[in-house]
Image (cartoon, rainbow, N blue to C red):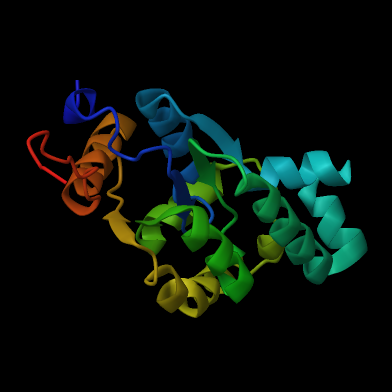
Length: 195
């Protein structure tokens, strides 16, 4: 059991937003963390599909990336009105400054920093269609996307390095430890203070 059991108010209902490249493990870790923290888990990509009534590949096909990004911001605005959430975000959500403001205003942003080789390996085995990678040179394009986004990801409140084959429980333990080190506890007022 992690030490969060002795600090049930660690996050005080503050949301956790997981950012990082596609394939970094945001959804897997997010579901696990939500259970550990007694939070709800949400995935912005799933919410976008539900809201639009179509898959993300179809959204890209018919409306293009611009329409997808506009929906992404709308969904994020709605999500941010609720507390006690672990939110897995799309890889490109960090490209919009408005999205940063929304996440910063309602939570802690955690960058899952996985090496390019690990992400390529995971995506090569993942049957989920990734609209930005539907091209023969997808590994090179993935590297380009990562280069374009790295500085944005680095603006997150916390950076969590992801290692290949590391169990989700171990990753979660490391993140919870980082949160304990970086999140200030609720101040207590001594009971003997006189007015």
